[in-house]
Amino acid sequence: EIYTLSLHDALPIYYLTDPNSAILFFETHLGARQLAHPGALPLKFVTILGLEPDEGAIEISPPGPFEGMTDPDANRWNKQLVEPSTTLPPRYGVYWLGIRTTSLKKAVLKIESRGVYLQERNLILPIDPKAKSVSIYGPNFNVFALVERPKRHGDTGEFGMDHIQLLVKNVDDNVRFFVDVFGAAVINRWEHSAIVTVAGFPIAMSDPVGLDLDPKEVQERLPDKFHFEADHLSFLYSDIHPAVEAAIAKGHKFAVLPTRVEYFGKPTPYTFAVINSPDGLPFELTSEDGRVGARDRYAQGK
Image (cartoon, rainbow, N blue to C red; front, side, top):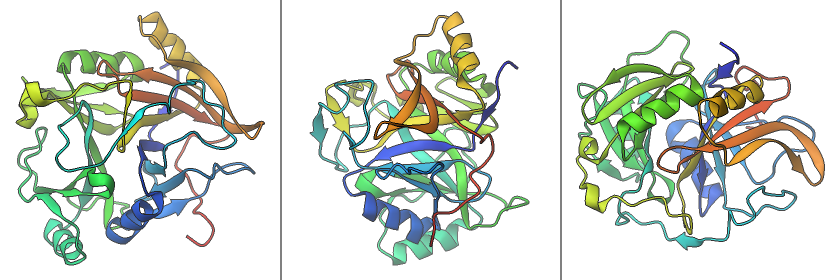
């Protein structure tokens, strides 16, 4: 292995209309806690939420542009904003984030009593049809799958990160992408679905048929439209440069080559690169000075 990859960073980065209410949703219903930013100059526009120690995190942010930041893609935010709705057609990208719980019945009773709307009461996971699961609507009608799992050694919270489900056009193309770029291990492959692990974390992918969708109704990721959803996924490396070079050697092109993030003209601990999946879903390769493991500090007072 020529580089070290760890899942102890944000997995999905959600851009949402009302970040404060979204943060409250995760804290109230899923027991999330806010994690501290590194360095002396925290990025004010993003909140990092952890469900359980020693796992990846969720980032919540409004759409940009952001004060103090220079975006390498000048047109990134010059898009038509698509109003969140349950009636929007499905789109290639993150279909749901899977959240595990030790008692699905208990979790559902609690969140339903607080007014959270269940999308599917008997959700069938393409990668694990025997698992007990439901899907719920979260902020901006993003879908989250609650999955019952046996309690793992070391668990401290009621909820934790279980998997990510992607809706993809071609499963083989996406499997190849994850293997080439992230050194993913292929766990299983079916006719319309597959599951790979990246640094031990499960990434499921299914084409429309694998998710009982009409392929003609699934929307492409159009560059001029902005959806309030999980906009991209991020993985943490000790050093992203060897990983980027290895992917380029295999014929992959990066939308953003390794770049040190600056905030109000000062360097931050972050270096990142961006590569798009075969369906146009952005992925960030990120490094953070001095960290290769889980974030170990909560935000003050959180």
